[in-house]
Length: 319
Image (cartoon, rainbow, N blue to C red):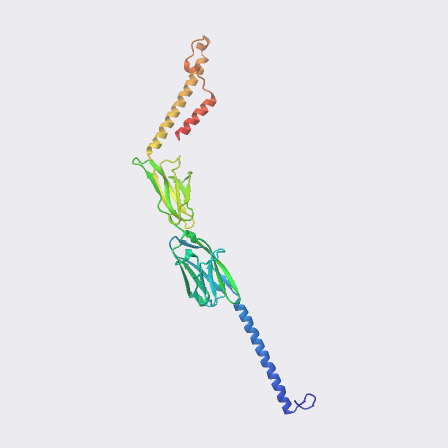
């Protein structure tokens, strides 16, 4: 190569050499810069998060539940592995890999009950449909997206809700209640309350039993002991805020009997008071001074404690 670096004037062949060198350097710099941009974009595209619904998915018993997951930022998930699973179980609910489903290790309880919706998979949005939802399906589902260089998860909660049958209360021909308020087919555990005609809540024992996936929860409660007139058995599914109720009119004889007993008790109390007053006057009269015979009634002593016990027993028997 000819040396022209120390000459005062630059020959044509030397100028051409310098131009070629500068052009090569410029091209190398441009390619390096473009490679850096592509690398940064690729690195950014490889990292992603999973977006799911913040509120639980609520599905009535026997219906279908849609569990949705999507990429953030949006991007195609066609070449990714997508898996739905629960807990640490070795089997999964559903798996999508290499553009098709893989059910080789699917949990037995979900076989024939899943459908993977991929209509928007190019935007990173997928939905797992669980068919014929049952109580055992309730809980958290982990949605897993896996790419060659990154993975991310999201958790979707599924809740089952079932509204039970209309409550029943058994009554005899005379209207007398012969059985408790009962209803079955509830999920989750329902709330049972007794309400009187004025809207007051009455206390009563409540029995709630989980039978099986068909009967679900059964609830039972006897009519409150102190109830009278018209009462309502109210059962509520608090998850759906849906109520079922049954009202019953209690026999009027119960109220009439109570009034009669109250009247009898009051009359007895008045009679006892009058007798006590008469004995007091008699004992302090001139006849006492003359040591005349004291009537047998006046010789009987009514202590304060005995009076209180007697009146309390009468009140308990009354109600």
